[in-house]
Image (cartoon, rainbow, N blue to C red; front, side):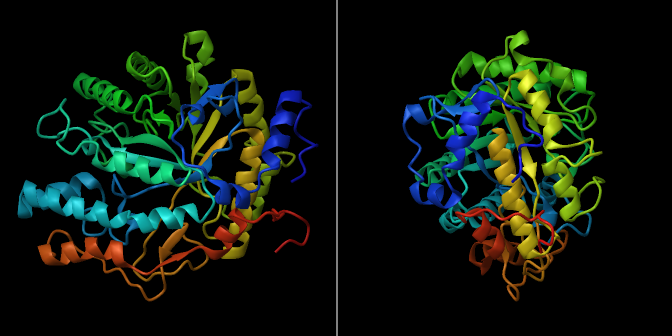
Amino acid sequence: MQTGTWMGPRLARAVVTAMLAAVTPAMAAQAAPKITEPGQMVRAEGARWITADGKPVTLKGANLGNWLINEFWMMGQGSNGIDDQCKLEATLDRRFGYPERERLMKLFRDSWMTTKDWDRLAAFGVNLVRIPFIHTVVEDEKKPGTLRADAWHYLDWAIIEAERRGIYVILDLHGAAGSQGWEHHSGCAGRNQYWSVPEYQQRTVWLWQQVAGRYRDRPSVAGYSLLNEPWGTDSANMAAVVETLYKAVREVDPNHVIILPGHVKDDIQAYGKPLEKGMRNVAFEMHPYPGHFGWSTVGREVHRAWLRCDPGSTNTVCEWDRRILALDTPFYLGEIQPWASMGLELGGQVARASFDTYAKLGWAATAWSYKYVSNKGGHGEGTWGMVTNAPGALVPPLDFNTASKARIEALFRLFGTLRYEPHGPLQRWMTSPAPPDPFAPGAR
């Protein structure tokens, strides 16, 4: 990648870049030491991510979407009026009772992510996963403000599987009590009561203190993403509430990076400079999706403009680099999607170029998402998954309002036995010693 036309002559940045460039993705995948030593814990130093023993670290990977909070479009479901987790759980409660709902949800989670999935994920050369979860994974919904009997089952298991493979974990509260946004991916579409009901904010303070208290000394936990896309309020209120959460976590955990979410309308401006507010060891999070959600159209051009800072482009990594350096705070791209719908070869190349660019800037990044499943299977021109069900490995759409318990159970078990197929070019380019240049004249 040509960087001389837009990166300033910063000596510290140049030194770090040289160190990172010496480690290829293939080398990192082969080395991948277990993450168990205190010196491996990640922290913020200025605008850099480093380990506790002072080494710069490049963090890149994927989200484990649809595992601990459902997104129906990711698993070939979502019609018939049931398109978020709250609706699914209410339907299962009504039809089969709460104990059976709990059993079925456990079956789903045990099937969606298995040890084989962790091996498939590691084969892409990643060293970071973001784990989106809904609050009821930890909190007993029948007794708010208390832990479930199995509160730590899935988070503990994920952290163990990750650290064995040299992968760091970011814990992401994707669905807070009351829902922090209107969208389905908050767990309960159309609710957005987190901001107006004090009890929900108090329960979230309690929740994060439980999480932070349990993992405060765990080196493989790279950070806490306090609220995913908290867009159900204005940015000033968002920043004030997040600062309250920051203080609550710091009461029990002085060690881990705390990740401050941005806002859809005016990003991170409401926070100001964290150090000036007494917030230390923090990072900012945004979710840039070039080519999606109204940001131009999918293709090579939108990614080139974003990554290469094309003249006339207003939203570029160069602009963000200047802002992050001025704020003296690390940057985390919690969700990106740099390969979908561009054809497999080009998608793989653009994804590698994206991760390489972020690494040279010192940013952490996780793609959405590790796994995506459709009814017909196959990657086509590029799904949103690093892996998907293979062509012919069909997933039936169900109407959870009428489907028998046996059919629902069979669907959930199927996710653990499907024939899965990795995105071949993506995996090849993510682990290749030699990077591609998808933006070179004549590149295909």
